[in-house]
Amino acid sequence: MAEPRWGFEALLRGRAPRGEVEPALRAVIEAASPGLALLDAAGRLLAWNAELARLCGPTLPLREGMDQAMLVTPSLREGLKAALDAGRKADAVLSGAGAQQVRIERCPLPGRPAASLLRVAPLAQAEHAAQNASAARLQAVGALAGGIAHDFNNLLSAISGSAEAALARDPDATTAADLRQVMESATRGAGLVRQLLAFARQQALHPRVVALNGAVDAMAGLLRRLLGSRVRLTVKLDEPGRRVRIDPTQLDQVIMNLALNARDAMPGGGALHIATGHAVVLQPQPLGQDQLPPGRYATLEVADTGGGIPAEILPRIFDPFFTTKREQGGSGLGLSTVHGIVRQSGGFIAAESPPGQGTLFRIWIPRHDGPVETPPAPMPLSASASASASAPVPAPVPAPQPPALAPPHAAEDPPILLVEDEPPLLRLAARALRGAGYAVLTASSAEDALELLDAGAPAPRALVSDVVMPGLDGLGLAAALRARYPALPVLLVSGYAEAALGRDLAAEGIRLLPKPYGLADLVTELRSILPA
Image (cartoon, rainbow, N blue to C red; front, side, top):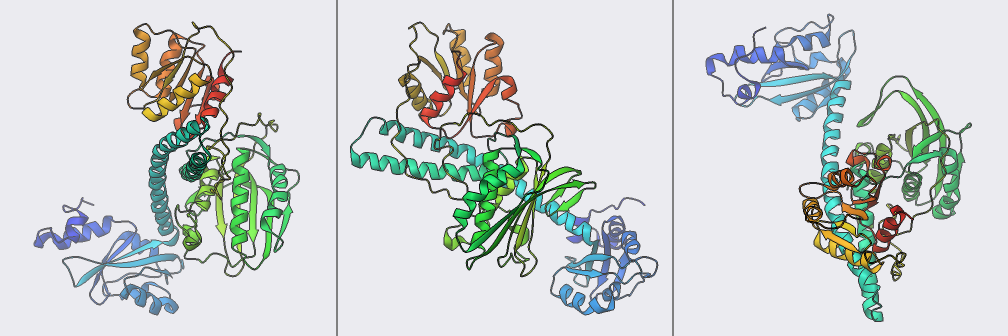
């Protein structure tokens, strides 16, 4: 078939020459997908494409003048007409022998008031298009959230670092109380930023191989205390237990968030059931806006006996900032955080809520065959790690203790090269490192740092650098310096996750410190990468 001379938009807007509208419109309808028909003012077929004829099948031959209602089974015709007359989409069953479920909509044809277009798509195809649109929207929001989170991390690092430095100078009681309030607010902000990063799948994770049964069993005691006496908790663990590779702290956060959501859904009390299991998926399976690929999975289910989630809300529960508890202080980030953690860990999550039967969240996490990994030594708790995603209000912040001095070194020992493009952070970090006994050479960009070294500055003892900077970034600077000094210890600070940076930093011998960080944490992390 020849290509239509006039584009669809031009036809809809009445911009094609009057004498060529009819043949051009017929050509566009024929080339369209899915099924498409041209209707007159009374809703009768004037023209249609081969795709619509194929959907209707041989037992429903299309003919000019056929009423649109004849396309569907008799019991649905009245409802179809009412929906289309009201400008709504309608799900129906074609009256052909195939009895195929379709979604039908009618839209006006601008410039041609006596005509309209009828679109008919297989229901699975229509839902797939809606899922793609929703996934694209969430991806765009995630990218925006990640960018905002990075900038906020810099601001929060400067705020909490300044307050921490001021508290370390032992101010009077009133000033100390005000500074602690500043740090508490910064800590709360850091918790919200982590929720944004979790949704955007850009938070810093520390995955290791864990036994899923062990993780769930360890949380059960804490959950019983949090849920209270009115919620009965039952736990069923699948045997033999499966192993998964995930950040155990984030797995705990997922379980806790879902359990607390369930508690809120049962204000009069009820039952919460947590179960582990396993699944072998042979064919791709649709999961809301995602698709579960084939593979071997460990599963985690969290089910409650609450009032359930209304059908019109269920597709939106993982959207960021969507909440039905705004008056109770809900941020709308709880379930989006859970979704982000699960997806960043390579897993999938879906929710079911039959009317009046509570809600079931089911999580699939890829199984791992390796042995369980021993947890690393606990990291010091700082503003970057103290606020829970589900309860970002922190405990009171104690007065920070100044970091212990570094081991004595000779005056001629090489300096720490500190590179940061945010002046307040550069100043605070330099003061903390010098206060810990290190010589420090500062630069506000990677280019400035390289120029200092080219001009005769001593070779650095270690590099501490931000990752995201104008021009050459921290990763590029680390590579350039290691080309000169192959054994150079490197500590990078960033608001982005290692996966978002596209590198396996641990394999390269590079330590990553998430923002916002405490000044004492910065000193501790630096000390850990320096040779003894």
